[in-house]
Image 1 (cartoon, rainbow, N blue to C red):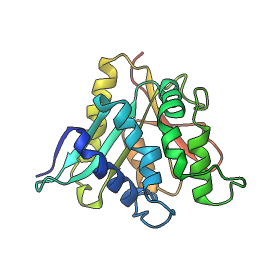
Image 2 (image 1 turned 60 degrees about the horizontal axis):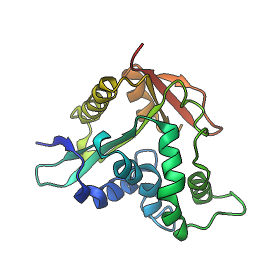
Image 3 (image 1 turned 90 degrees about the vertical axis):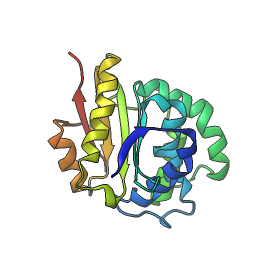
Length: 200
């Protein structure tokens, strides 16, 4: 039976793998980009590096990591660290595009543009998360259990609220977050955002 456990540094490669295999609105994104690592470089691994204490994985019976949740409790501080400490090494593999035309261009530009103040929902909902689960985990309540684990820790820390963004084409994710009591928030063009208050 699968179990949830805290993230370990040895899980780093698995985060890259799970992220790429679930990044296309929940489907396998392998091969969509010129370098599959970009998915994890933006949306998974830096969170586990910065906040291993806010990162958990789903471990299968055979020891494989088949899902994860990663988060920050302070979006502005995280984006400052991402800009100053994480992205400089990563961007060597991803020159900034002149024309932001393709999906990959938009993602690379997203990496270059992360900085304190860019998250429009970060003031009222300072925490944010990323969660990805392989298809074999679905229907077991593991997504809910991962979110509950994170929410409990954020509440313990006194976090006011949490926001997240999803691909608007991922109807399953939207339904999942709405079942968790999240409400729609303002979002960038082409995006969809949700948030939830954690403390009064």
